[in-house]
Image (tube, rainbow, N blue to C red; front, top):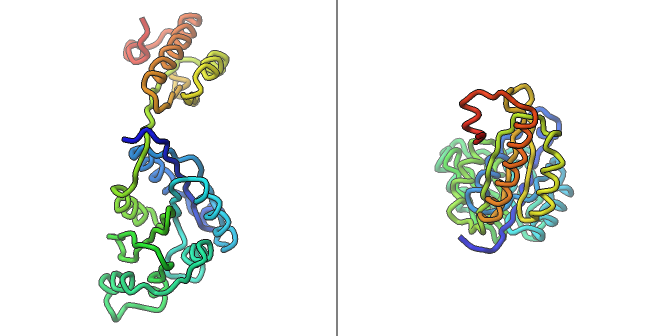
Length: 260
């Protein structure tokens, strides 16, 4: 594990996501991969199937972050324009890759290798292929941009293929504290602690209707000592809030909350 901070962005491409017809399932998968690899996923963008939008987003993100993961738009239909947009963004040609073509033919056979499937064999010059064990048609990597399918099962397979090649930095650690009061009760205390610990991210997440746990506070940091110190202070204000309201919590939850 490196002490260097490694960052990433995800770019989701597709009108179907923006219209609400399709619910995105890929962002959580990318986030999990990044967390496990010690990569900080710092930004997510969603753009339409419009070449200019894709080009601008890719060029912005690849300059800002160590890794860019795109999903969607590399299928066989006319509106799958991600490969075209990536080629424009990098100012390179987009020829049919014989290697990609062979992979697709091996999956479907020569008889079923249609012109539409040939579109999926177009790979920007200078890119390397990302294996697709599900349907054969590969994704590709060009510089720090990883271009993957939008279909969740295929995208996950591509993530698994690239995971061993990613170089992470300091891993993000987390600590969760269940709270038996509403977040407004501890809001000021959390704010004061956050000001003391710039290296710790403190989030408060209401759990509506899930009594007796009303809120969960999650602390995240790459520094174990800072995380533990901040968590102790948060736990102290949580315990005080419970005592002040004389909350009668079930024994099991009392143990979980470390109440004395």
